[in-house]
Amino acid sequence: MNNVQMLSQPITPTTSNKPVELYIFIDPLCPEAFAVQSTLRKLQLEYEHYFTWRYVLSTELTSLNCLGNRTKGCVSGDELDITHPVLPSIAIKAAELQGKRAGSRYLTKLQEVAALKTRNVNSHSTLLEIAQEINLDMNEFAVDFGSKEAARAFQCDLYITREMDVHEVPSIVFFNECIEDEGLKVSGSYSYEVYEHVLQEMIGEKIIRQPLPSMDELFNRFQSLTTAEVAEIYSIDEAVAERELKKRMLQQKVERMMNDDITLWRLK
Image (cartoon, rainbow, N blue to C red; front, top):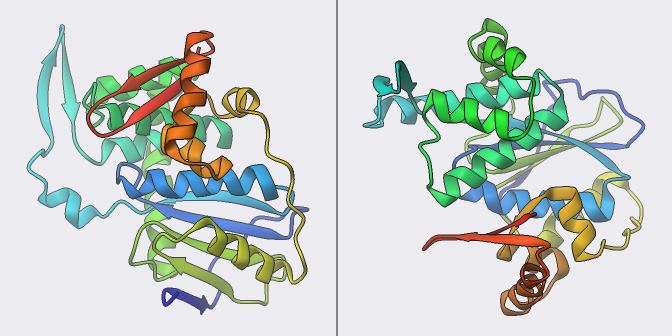
């Protein structure tokens, strides 16, 4: 693994009684973000007693500015709907102002809509709909979405990306509880075992794995998962995962949504 390096710590991690903190750098609408989400979810299930984590949005603004879908007005009902590829990142930061869990739920729902390609996630109106669907405080979200605080929070993420010299997404930077120690940056996507090994290196002793939940408990926690995620979490073939998921669909525990690129299962 060539893309693992030590780096001086430019940012002070948040204090916690857990010995490791993960900074997870993603472009939220990049397909690779799904891969790192699967890894993070399994790490949470097995080892979250050792670490805290935060997403850092590393949307490349130069790429955004070169996209053909620039800021424009689209008539939606009686209102002017604004679309721009930077809006999803701002919306995520606006959701995070209602708490870390709210931001995580928003990101997951945003990625779900983007993957299914049912709506334009660069649309202001769609981003408001997503907030409503996950039961955010809509008055607060509407104000925060257009606020300087959300824009500054996104700018802060871009600053952290530059300070930690992150040039590839996804990347994960591991910090331990000793602020004098350097962080360890893993650039790119790797197998689950690599991140498990790095976590153990940061802890400095053998780490204890918690048992995985049942599939029903898994959906109660994460609400929606792809077939590939379920297969990775349980270390089974996708065909086996799909059979188990179809059983739960027949029992009306989950519903299936799919297109040519992805199959997603959502708790009913």
